[in-house]
Length: 180
View 1 (cartoon, rainbow, N blue to C red):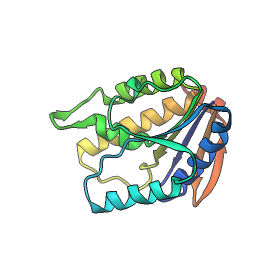
View 2: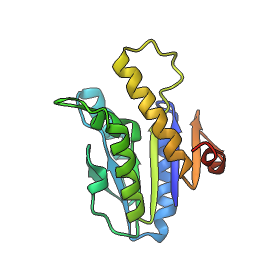
View 3: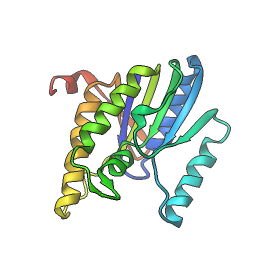
View 4: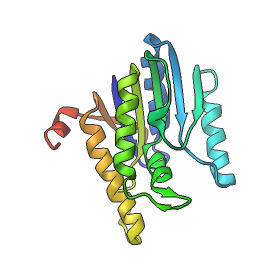
């Protein structure tokens, strides 16, 4: 089972994803949380600590990994929650040595490799498409790349959700498959 979940910042998408992963994880050998965020400042550390505290006691094994998620060796019957696609793409796209223009394809291929190796995946991403833009060209390219990943990864999902003000709205993944 693969579930794709997207939503605006602080929409409740992480909480919903954790709940779904725990449900799916009942028939898995392990429940794995992949944290893709790099901690750059005190605000990010505060958010990471809030996420850790919320997950406490839920049974997740946390792996902090910012790049090359497709190379992770995980048990075949694991349930994996990836938080988040948007952060993972940024990590792969904006490197210390410049911009990786192939980051979108790399993230897609890494995700598909990981997806084929485990029992369940819950993938969380941010909806950054509704704020009106006004971005520089590099940010526009990131948003275009993330949008393309949303289309491709939602199209292969078993279930697709948008979280709106804490409410999960389910979409038909079959409708998205017609676009790809």
